[in-house]
Image (cartoon, rainbow over all chains, first blue to last red; front, top):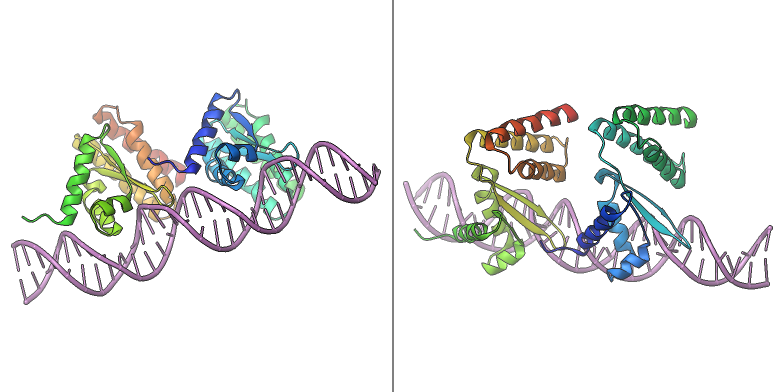
Length: 141
Length: 141
DNA sequence: TGCAATTTGACTTTTGTTGACTATAATATA
DNA sequence: TATATTATAGTCAACAAAAGTCAAATTGCA
C-alpha cells in the first residue's frame, strides 16, 4: 500500500504508544511536524481522524509554552462498558458544545472517568459511567 | 471469442492475485486505467462485475490521496462456510444500508471476519461467522 | 434485430495537505 | 503586579488527489 503522509504519522505514533510504559505518549505537535517535514496542522489532522474516541483513544493537550499533545490508548474493555463510556463521552461533548462545561472540564472529566476506574471490573465500570453521567446531569442541569 | 477490455483487465488482475503472496493485491484505479488506456470507471466496472463477493472476492478501498483498491480472493472451499460467510456479508450490507453501521465499519467487520479466522478449520468457520452475526445483532439491535 | 454486456465521461464523495488566522499558556519585563 | 512577548496548539477553508456513481452511447451476440 502506498502510504500517505497521514498513514506514516499514524504508524509512527502507534509504535511510540506500543513501546510506552502505559499506552500513553506525549508529543509536541510542531516537533513531530518537523520530523515529517509537514505543517503542524497535518499532525492535528492525523490525531483527530485516527486517534479519536471512536478509535479507542483519548487525547488531551495544552497550548502555549511547554505545550503538548497527550494520546492515551484506552484498553479494550467489554462492549457494555465501552458503550457506556461512549455514552458518557458523548454526553460530555454535548454539554461542552452547549457551553455548560468548558473544553478543559470536558477533558478533565473524561480523563477522570477513564483513569479513576481503570482497575475496576468492567461490568462495574459500565454502571460507574452511567452513574457519573447521572450525577453530572443532576448537578448541571 | 474476441476478448473485451473488461476480460483483459480481469485476466490481468487474476494473474497478479495468483502471483501474490497471500491472494491479495492492491492497485490504484487510475494507474491501472492508464495501463489499459481506458477511463478509471472501467476498472470499477470490472471489479464490481468480476471480483464481487458472489465470485468469492473481497474488495476494500480508500479514496483521496494515495487511495487504493484492495482485492482479496477468499478461497474457502467448504460450501457451508462459504454460505455462512455470504449470510454474514449480506447481513452486514443490510445494516449498512439501514445506516446502523457506517460504510467503514461494514468494511472493517468483513475484513475482520475473513482475516481473524483465516487459519481456522473451515467447518468451524461456519459456526464462527454465525456467532459473529448473532453477537452483532445482540449488540446493535 | 433486440437485448445484455461493455465503454465512456460528467459529476459526486471521500480523504489528505497546506497555510493563514485564532486561542491559550508560560515567561520576561516594566 | 500588570502587561507584553513568545511559544505552543487549534480551527477552518481552500485546494488536491484519489475512488465511486450513474446513465447515455456503443458493441457484440443469440
